[in-house]
Length: 150
Image 1 (tube, helix red, strand yellow):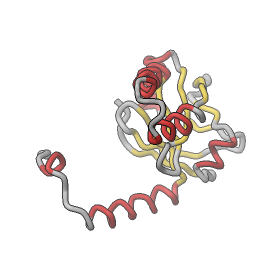
Image 2 (cartoon, helix red, strand yellow):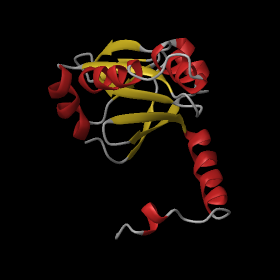
Image 3 (spheres, helix red, strand yellow):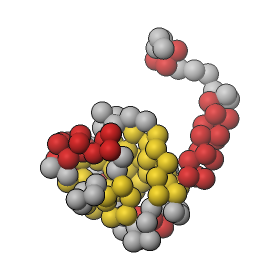
């Protein structure tokens, strides 16, 4: 499982180094093959091992294709997906189109989300966290969440 938040640099060629604590797992899951795409709802990128991506892609393929939400999900998530391989230094190359989509500058947040990572521009990440804090204060906590014991 990918967990934790990391502040990372994106080099001038658009490469991002996966932190050492996640590198072995990323290499083991799919022999270093990863899939990078845009998040369908947020201004960030998502990064999956090829193995986990293929499972997700199968699930999306089973959804009703004429449903507007399925179309959005498929067109954004699958349509922008690109395979990338970890280089010998544990880096991935982020295409310029993806850098523009997520407004990435030279500093990025890599946020572990269990089976995937989100990649955010550092400032956008802070703004998003503030926004979530504000919005969650305006809504009642769902039973499923309040029943968790931390």
